[in-house]
Length: 101
Image 1 (cartoon, one colour):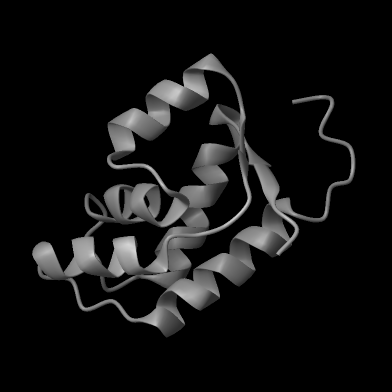
Image 2 (cartoon, helix red, strand yellow; image 1 turned 120 degrees about the vertical axis):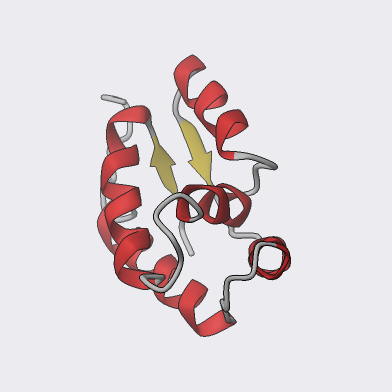
């Protein structure tokens, strides 16, 4: 994984990718799962940090996302998250120039 820059502008596309990768999770649960997957404790804290500046995502917290999913009763496995990681990398990781964000 080479990483990618996440900004508020890109958040809508990120949510779309999450809906494709984990459609069996409720729409309200997906942002929280994604926040944990990206390394934040809550979606609110992710939004707070994105409002300050873009955040460079270098890796994913698969176990954190799976643990949270179990707590809320969502059947999520590593394959779902691997698919999401691939989608995010395809969507955001190919851009070489992050200076415009």
